[in-house]
Image (cartoon, rainbow, N blue to C red; front, side, top):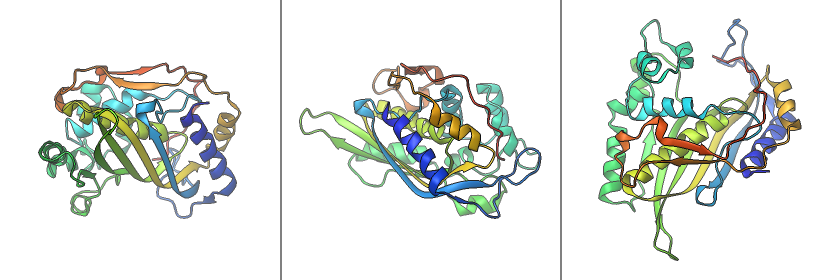
Length: 281
């Protein structure tokens, strides 16, 4: 069993046995019914990417390519325009969160990154002093929320730290992702691997190695129409192979020159068939 599969099953068991039901929840299903969930608070996991521990389950297929395209839309294109996501990357599931026929998800995510020059400031800070302790991406901007309506960011904060291995002098980039809310069965490994991809892009930009990935979720939940799928996942026998995400570009490749096809997921043989999940909107 991979470390990620162990964490996945432990979290499912904990939510199903110790979780409490949400009340007055915001999301709803496509049929209009309120999307309640069973949840726990304060979930944390640590992955040592340098030792092959990647946060992706093998218990079901994870659409990693579309997840990375979404990441590029946010941090390279720096826009909330849905037509860019659809036409440039062929990703359409964000259409459900279009704001009032505007063609966008509002002043959120990529639009926030652009408005506050978040990536440029982050890269500039790491370039001037890699050892500083202020390398933060924060998408939780109240003035942006006041500007338009729209879905509030789930994976809203990430932090980056550089360290040198005293044994061989190699420089590693560590990352921490903080998420206010996460759908355990659908989005957990999608969000985690997106930010590992971001970590890889930043590390390649400077010619560093990827080190550790820390993942904290405040509200980790399973929706009330997913309990059957949760039990099915617990019954599955995971793949014996250990997946690994790599970025096939030379060291010091500019952050903005990385493409989705530059990423490769090695030794990924997830259990099939895929499970069906009705989206909570």
